[in-house]
Length: 210
Image 1 (spheres, one colour):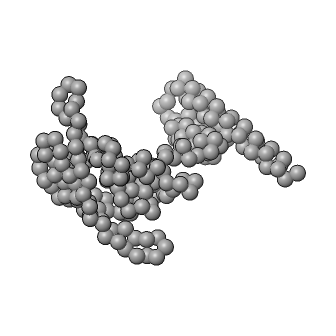
Image 2 (cartoon, one colour):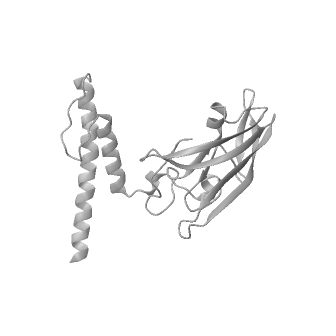
Image 3 (spheres, rainbow, N blue to C red):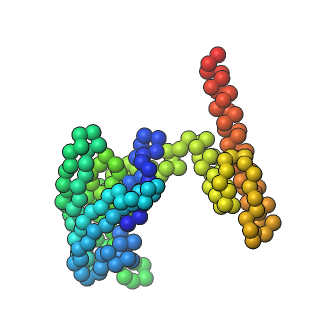
C-alpha cells in the first residue's frame, strides 16, 4: 500500500522514506474488516522505478472494541546480507467518538501509545509509532536553502514548468492571465528567497576561506 521514498534525508530517517501501515486506510479499503478475521498481504512500490520494494503478510481480527494484527515478513541486513524472519502481533483498540461509534487505533508495540499509523524505517525491523522511531518529516530535516528550493520547484510544478530555477515559464493553456500572474508572483517570491540564501552561503564560504 502506498509507495516508499528514495531513502533517508540528511542521513536521518524520515516519515516519507519509511514503510507505513495506515489503519484507517486499511479499514476503508476492506483489508481489515470489522467483526471479522481476515488474512492477506500488503506491498509497497518504489516511487521511482515502480517496482515492488517490500511486502508483508498479515492476519487481522477486529472485534467490537478490541482486536489484533499478526504481521509476518522478512528483513535483510544491508551490511551482511543476512535475512531475518519476523512474526509478531500488534494490538488494536478503540476509543468512543463524541457523537457515537468508536474510533480504531494501533497500540504501538514499543511505546504503548494509540496511533493511526505505524512506520518501519530502513535499518529497523519493527512497525511502531513515529515517536518510537523518532521520525521527522522531510521538511524538518531540510536546511533553510533546501526548503526554499523545494518550495520554488513545487510552485513551478503547479504551472507545468520543467526547467530549473530562473528558467522562463509559459502560461498553461486555458489558465486565465490573472491566475497565471498570481502564481508567477508566488514562483518569483520563492526563487528570490533561493537566490538570497545562495548568495549568503557563497559569502559565508568565501569568508571562511580567508
